Length: 279
Ligand code: AMP
Image (cartoon, rainbow, N blue to C red; front, side, top):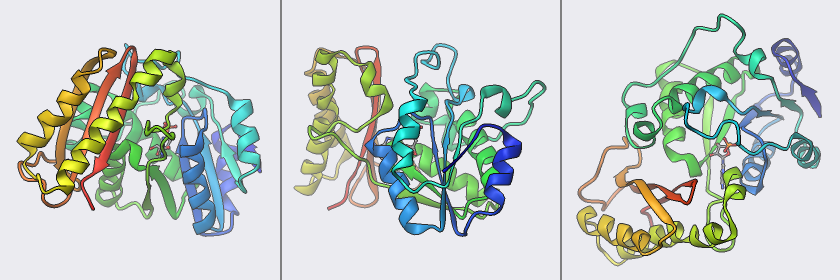
C-alpha cells in the first residue's frame, strides 16, 4: 500500500495501476461504512485508491471543520488489512494552493434539501471530487447511499461533464440499533447517541406504512415528523421530504421511485439519513 501526500506523487502512483481502478473518496476517521465501499471496490476492480481528505471548502463558516474527527494512524492501520493499493492523503495547501480559483457546481441539485441548509457544501464536494477524478482517473468511484443527494449530484456531474467514471452506490451500513454509521456519531453524548435511533425508527415507520399501501406523502411525512418530535433531544429538523429518487423533486404520490430524506439535529450533531420506498 503506497501512501502519497502530494499531487505529483498521486499522479505518478496512479499512472501504472492495474485497470480497472476503483476510487473511494473519504474524509477519514474510517468506519465500517467506509470499509463496505472499499471492500466492494476491491472486489470489482484491479486496483483501489482511497483518498482521505477533510475538505475545508465543503464546510460552511459555522460548520464543524475544526472539530471534524480525525485519526490518520488508525485509518492507515485499517486500510493495511484491505488490499488497498494507494492512499492519497493531501494537505489543504496541496489541494488548494495560493491562487486557487476554479469551482464545479450543479445548478439545481445543490439548491435543494441538503444544499439549501448547507449552501457551500455541494460546490465543495463536486469540486474536490472532480480534482480526485482528474488525479486518479478511476474507472469507477464508490459513494454511500447514506449521502444520497451527494451521490445523485456526482452522478449528474459525471453525465453533464462527460467524465468517464462509473458511479457505484453502496447501501447504508447501520449500527445494530439502526443508526447509520457516521464519523460524526462519536461527537454525541451517551444520551444523544441513545436518542439518535429515533431517526431510523421514523424512517422505518414511513417504509412500513408505505408497505401497507399508504402512498400519500401528505400522510407519510407528518407521521414521521410526529415520531421525531416525540424525542426531546431532537432539537430541530432541517428537512424531511419524500422525493423522486432520480430527479430529487418532491412527490405527492410515492407509489414509485420514492425516497425519504431527512436531516435532524440531535443535540449539536446533525443526523443525515434516508430510506428508499421499495419492497
Ligand atoms: P465521508 O468520509 O463521511 O465523507 O464518507 C465517505 C463516503 O463513505 C461517502 O460516499 C459516504 O456516503 C460513505 N459513507 C459514510 N457513511 C456510510 C455508511 N454508514 N454506509 C455506507 N456508506 C457510508
